Image (cartoon, rainbow over all chains, first blue to last red):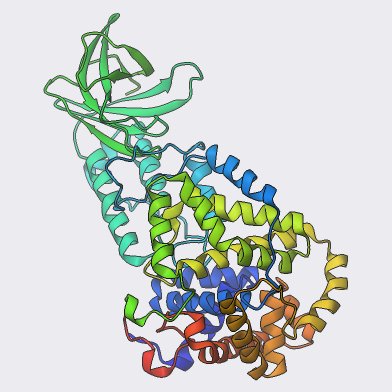
Length: 298
Length: 216
């Protein structure tokens, strides 16, 4: 398993060039594909970064202008933090912050702006793995919209997790998580699908996936709620009177699959669905603030 | 990599850094101020060296600290020190900026200066503390032990922000030779700098004994 030094020498060289941000594009692509699976290279990059940091100590020290501190303070004041990666410890008293950008934007910024976890600034994670084909019969009877929602969820989760951490363990955990989401959304059986659109700008922010006794929401743009004093409620639409079906929380501004807690059955029997945000943790008899709604498409 | 094997760093060293990172992760905006106090000078010095422009350098420094604030989990404590990670980001963003800003012509003109400057600098501010001077002396001594060609390749890439192909063109050497020189030079520097360059080990820069030791 352990490559002999001379076999691995070209990668050792690339690792140093990578840390120095001096690779040619073709080498960068080559090494970017190699790095995630090579602990030795990850260590080489870290070592090179340490030496580089020491080299910076030989520069004439200089003081930036006092105005820079003020500008930085102002910028920090106006900038929300990205949520921690899955599995990271989030202090209980810190409400999840919502990044200003949409999924694609924030994911992209992570890729291009921030050095990845091991200190290799140029690391571009490989594209999310394609969803493996499932050659079983039930797959074919799934409505396209459902598959589309699942694929969107997998791709977004994949990108998100992979860019957050290039560590192998985390990537494996992310893959397991994705498989779970995939299984959950693509389980055999009849399902009712309703894309829901945000009130106001009409942007699609979630997809409701309803089965007889199970309700799930693929969220992709709903604001993270404070789960100590608010909750999202899914409403089934019959004529003009909505029926409260269950509650869920949005814990990530990224695409995520939320299972809706519900005691009802016949959850798939509605012509449309709406999502509201409610104060407190209880389902009211009528929605307070409908944030999104949509009709069943399948 | 426990505290015991940590090399001697600045007196206020690593535990303080870990603390600050934890505070930033907890959403404390004031912690960015403290990080800025700790790292603004080396960060600005590096960005200014690469960009040769104070305004652009300040933009890079601001961008770096703002990035740390926005995404503090991007730093993985299991790999290397926070200081080296932060300085790597400064280097990366400054190099990106210099490649964006500089016209080809200006780069060529400056390349001559960079070649001349590939010898270690000696200018110092009077207010540098003893630690800074010590590091600088160690670094200069270490660079001094390198064969000229290796030192040239590394300093052009690190301080100059040149790609390997540009370094090859500037030094009239084949690309493969430049790659080999950079690795060999880094190995030598790592050996020479020892404690100053941090406690990370087990990669291609460490001695054979540590290679593939499996420790993270």
